[in-house]
Length: 246
Image 1 (cartoon, one colour):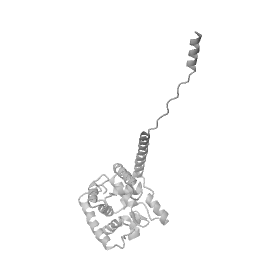
Image 2 (image 1 turned 60 degrees about the horizontal axis):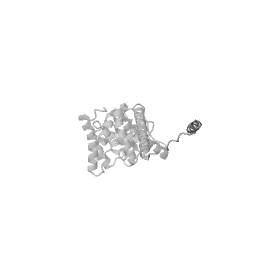
Image 3 (image 1 turned 45 degrees about the vertical axis):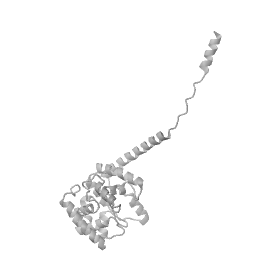
Image 4 (image 1 turned 135 degrees about the vertical axis):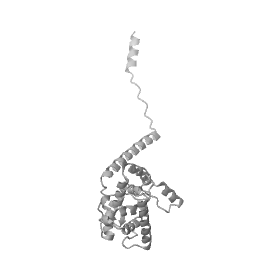
């Protein structure tokens, strides 16, 4: 009887064995944190897009970097109602004639650019707004992936008129000159609402290379390009491709 009691006491004194060490699974850990990071980036993107639908971006990363380099910028925000309709049509005709019909990425223009060996730009106005307002300049795979993700989101949450308004207010027209209000005064001494068809077309013609071209002292190329833009702006007015923003 005493032996049985002693054995029971020894059994009770034994501590439970510690649990085996937790195995770290690198692949599962990486996938879990990649998902969390992607979710955080998505939530942040949605919030920023919603905020800038109603609030005007105070600056952009590129504008900030140019201000650090130059010391000051010429820029003042104006609502789209104060911008001449012909200027609105001119920039769409020059940069993105199918602006009203695509969802942010113009697949037809992209295919054509690929067929031509990449010598032709295929970025839509929407993509340029995303790059300027939410991202940064430069040829980066990461930036391109973010741009491709944010552009359809912005198209879904912003009306086309708002997209064009933001574009016209953050586009660079000369060194240190940003937005159509500053550009109209800088080149022609008028407000953005007083721009003529020719002036609008010349401003639109310099957009791809604003530091190398002049709207007030146009080269032969800019004159020819402006003539094409005048015709294109009238075409999209007549065929209804300006209906989403005018």
